Amino acid sequence: MNWIILIIAGLCEVAFASCLGKAKQTTGTEMYLWYTGFFITMTLSMVLLIKAIQTLPIGTAYAVWTGIGAVGTVLIGILVFKDPTNFWRLFFMSTLIISVIGLKFVSE
Image (tube, rainbow, N blue to C red):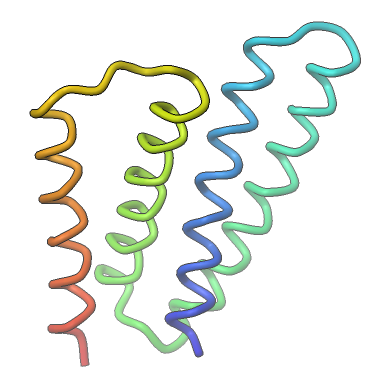
């Protein structure tokens, strides 16, 4: 169950990074709504991470959490914010995914 909580925490990390990106693109009330989304998803991400590390090794949990956040944020950047895509970017993102999966399998 804590692995599921950790995955949700990582997805919340993607959400808070995405909210920052959208806030940067907007002004006025809409910008403040995106910042509100940022603070809510950041808080939720941290609370879920704290819950997950109650039973998971801290090093593995943190690496998985940041890995999900990093890969998810890169994907959102490519799909939503039109960030550049090239072979090396996709290659290193793939190695990150493989590393996170490997950490999960060697933990406990």
